[in-house]
Length: 195
Image (cartoon, rainbow, N blue to C red; front, side, top):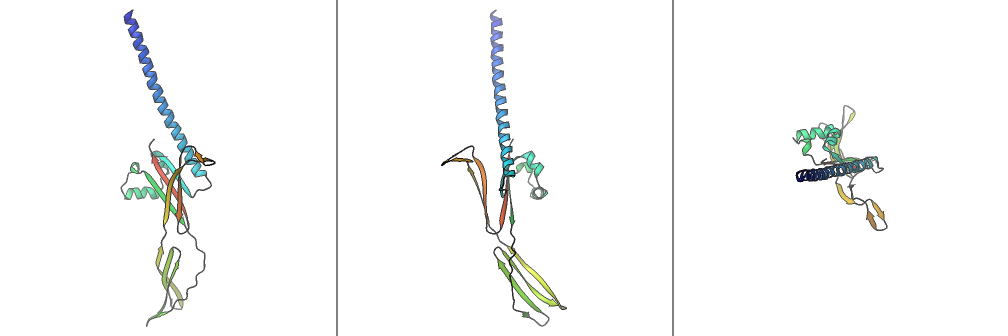
């Protein structure tokens, strides 16, 4: 009888131990799935928001590989970087349109063979220069200097999304703010997360 009791106690202990391990495994799995759902929800909110100038995405390696552009793929190949080594990617696109009119009346540069009219135009971040000459009664514009200088400042910060009076609450979220000297800048930041 005592042997049967010992076996029953051992079976009960083993059953409780295996139940505890199973609950712990299921709890970890549930937390990982919940974090993944929150990540996907935040990504969707970023992509669907009205302010699409600054996008901060958190992608798994598989999602990153599926969405990777051919340009990023070729940059990684040339730099001999494996996609699994990538932690973050920041892409800045600057859009600048200047439709202002500039009148340039250059002084002629006369030589024995021809006359050229050198010019340079500096406007905001752009510098364009060259010269004009007339050859066979046809004007020819030769541009030999193009320069674009722009400084983009990117600030990544965290804050709680909800505010009630002076108190912020909710889970902290990451935001990006950009500032550009010229034009409008669209920033997409991709962070690779481990799943």
